[in-house]
Amino acid sequence: MSLITAEGISPPTILVVDDDPSLCLLLERYLTMFAYRALVARDGEDALRSARAHPEIALIMLDVVMSGLSGRKLAEQLAILLPSAAILFSSGHPASELARLGIEMRGAQFMQKPCRPLELKQRLSEMLAARRGR
Image 1 (cartoon, rainbow, N blue to C red):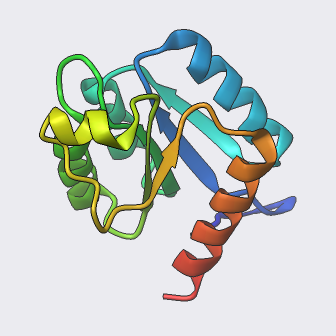
Image 2: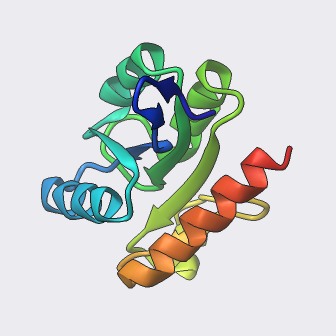
């Protein structure tokens, strides 16, 4: 849900969760360029703190393979805190490697890293539109 401010409706808030600092910075720049409000978390605990502090988060971009709490387990906890937020999983590992690691992505929204900025923009737009349609 977007917040209504004195200036009008605020842009959707997207939480990026990735343990790669340079990728976080790049995604934050893309999201800002796409007119979204970007929040960045570098690990699971940071993501959970952000979720508690920002109930307006509309979408979570979540790295599947991170040190500490795995992307799938973190997604389960974030879904409890932010039940209306869409989740887009991403990984630089090919699907075959994820399967070998025992990470099942069937039924989840997934985007392979790296991706082109316009692909990302389109996917986010589609997911946010579907979320509004619920």
